[in-house]
Length: 156
Image 1: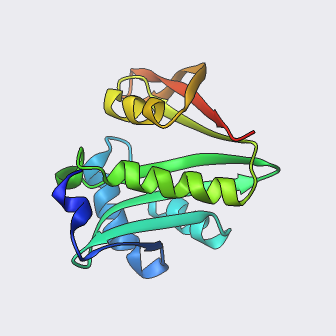
Image 2: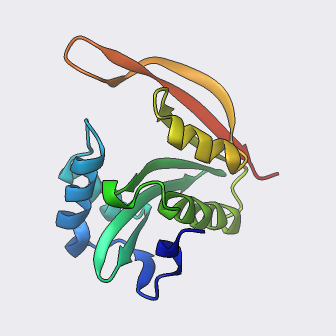
């Protein structure tokens, strides 16, 4: 286990509107095509499960989970680049898996860029199975798009 996860000031809590500037800085630093502020605000407004992880009061990760009709969809899982590959993503994912189980979902779904091998390895290690592919789903540039790999984890 990375020492970061043992830090006494590591905290996971629900995301709040006041967190959004820092959440957006992490989102923009981590992704070539980040979510917009409006999308994040909408997720909070409609009551999705939105979490943040902070270390010494600085946000280092966030996640968004939608739950409904017996299913859950992991919509966003982001770790600030300096904190990547240190267990923060797994910590967030495990919390979301517990929340999905508590809400008695049948299956948790997610999509990931086919090039994001670190995320794919994480999801597979937590029991997700590849169930499909969305061709050309993610933008790479104006002329290019990348496939999304669809994963599912059943709870029944």
